[in-house]
Image 1: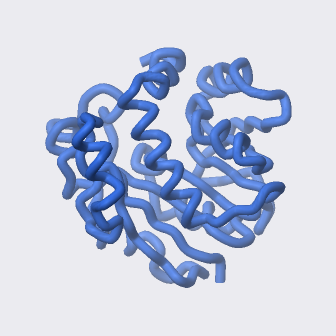
Image 2: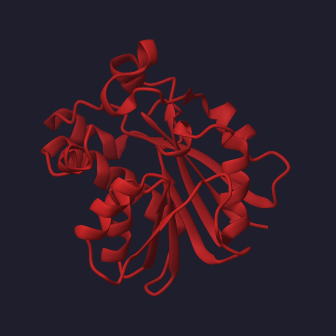
Length: 213
């Protein structure tokens, strides 16, 4: 999949709904204020980074793929920062950003535990990190047999598994919620999503949030 193809998906009706639903959930948990700094780890083409910047956050996107970062730079405001780097060894000092965001990116990283520790290290206040949920309808549609499309090669987790990745780290008020319960994005899906409790562990995205202790 090319960067252009991947980014174009977010401009389809389904892609826009999924992206906005996931971002709205993360934004609510981060409770960031205009002017706060945010690092988007595993930003890819930068859709979530640009979305955060649209909320007046000082956003930086990090990804290991230079070609995808080139696409992000070419399709964003010069005010955004883009850094090539490894989630397992973030090139930033401790507490460099008010908030850290990562949506379905660490599930493609070897040694997710180390990447989580790095996200926590560079956060000053809050973090919201999303994984693909093995106990979801999305997994049945896209995750079996090694995954298909943009999901190929991803690791899918349970709520207990992602919570365990934070064990022993300097965090507090850890919360695991989910979103995208009916991923087909039909009118019924869209109408039901807001009334399904986010605390149910069956959405396609498992989102872990908390505060730096």
